[in-house]
Image (tube, rainbow, N blue to C red; front, side, top):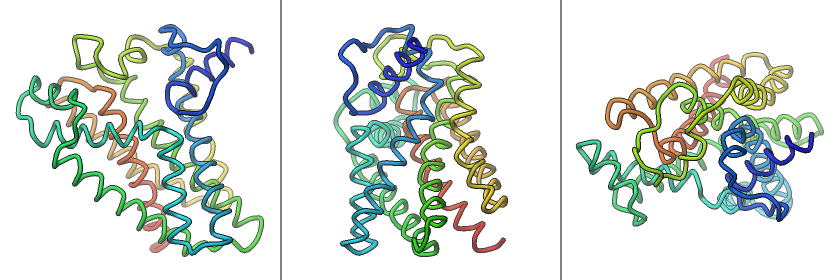
Length: 265
């Protein structure tokens, strides 16, 4: 149990800005094992986002509460995944060879593709969330739990989608310059099973209220499949930025999928 707590706190330290015990460091062995808890980090981030939304919606409008919720999520992760999304937009938008794409993504400066991509991503995420919470007003304990599970499921499943690329594809860079290099070296069945368990459990619980919500997994993992194939085609694998972009895209697709399910089913 003590070792698992150490691995969990390693994941928490690597993927968020939440303070951790002083004895936690970037030990490569623990970082490799930390991938099993990546979707569990989504529980924390999703819970924080919902908590901020719920509390601030008591005082402010839904729009303001959602924006504050999104800010809370960005502050919690240090814009870890949003930064990866912007780098992917810049790299694949401005590069036409593997070397050029990787060089652009390594640059800390944000370009036009990255800036435009982030603006559109945030607009789409805000609009999708507004549509969701507007259709599921918080009026009793059941609706509170459902909304909480929606936030948590989006964050856990999108992280499962991202980390699953590590299990099926190769790391692209030949050096250790990427943020994902420590988790890209090796993994065991424990990382795969742990990721699947923590990634799918919130939605499995949510499906007790409406089983059709399980259908949201289909478009999410279709998007994951095509993103992974796109990365493989252009850079022969993935980088940490690719994982961050996958998380952000799959999170938004999850929200859109839930909206579609509620509309047609």
